[in-house]
Length: 130
Image 1 (cartoon, rainbow, N blue to C red):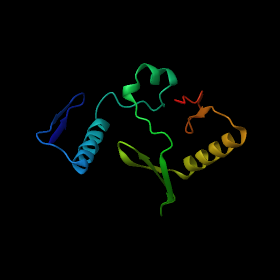
Image 2 (cartoon, rainbow, N blue to C red):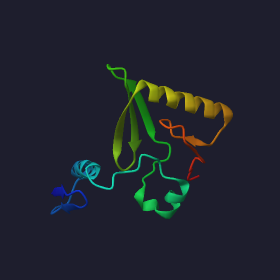
Image 3 (cartoon, rainbow, N blue to C red):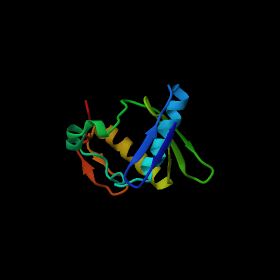
């Protein structure tokens, strides 16, 4: 199994059946290659319209398993379990983690369904699939 990429294309050769571990390794390798390709992913989350127009471009897991821990450098590591991709880890600055905590606690108390980009304070309608 090989996967190679240029700035705009990727070539994948799989000459065998893959078990779950090998498939995860391929997915991880493809993710690394994709991160080096153009166009880069948007910094903004997809809008509900984009989700409706191109649902195959996005993956969503309903109510994922979540784990969060404090790292020795003060960052927070947020783990989210996607049913197809496994555990995804995100290291968050303390200010971003505080913004998330503030956003969630305020929205739960107000039963507010709007979304906010916690880095830019842009708002949206939530884009819920439900």
